Length: 320
Image (cartoon, rainbow, N blue to C red; front, side):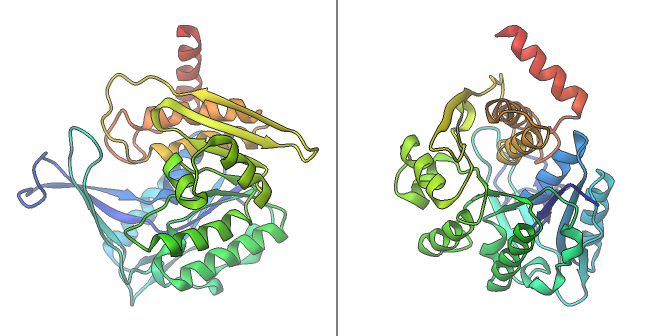
């Protein structure tokens, strides 16, 4: 049984082959996209046992996604296929500078129709960690119910709960996002917001206030991502003391594609904690994988194997 579980939607992604407006693009490359499956693939590549829970359409895109994720070594036994609802789709612009335009076609997708009944408590029994994001509960009320049911099962089984807010305001309003995501944060052990996300949720991006607020909600680990510059981190040791610090990011000569960097950061942090690293060292690993992710096109193509990761961090340490 997997040590790490993820829950969420993945879509087939059509990436433009030319850097024009999507209005004029005629050729696309097919890939997959999904924050939770990105994390699952990244963790599997560096040797962790991971399971991905989701739903796909009984269509060629659904089969492609399942086979691709399974081919990375992720357990997909808890993925269901719907004959009634399709696999989600997104179309992504090829952009040489800045973040690309992304168009989503996911309303009414198979994943958006998931309900708590798809969850099998026995599948959680031997796991150590459940990783969730704020994207899945934004898809529908049934997805919210499913996410909270998964967290409840995980907590009953003693799993660590990791939460990346991953706020997508295309999917819901600020007020709805804030209310639901703070509720999830209060059920989590580790939270990984970016600076803008922390400000939306708490009304401040001041680091000490952010850390204090999330610790009061019950988070043992608080990490606030600061883009390419690095990340703040704080550990609540339950003895009225906190260990806080900042780890600088890894320098990248040329940014190719920023999508997937945050999920890569989560891969590094989660793997480090599961392997017993101090939080500061886990954040270094997160910075490393996040920086590798942005050097190539695609969400997961830049995620390293274990040997590649170790060599990259060692090279960076020598240069420092």
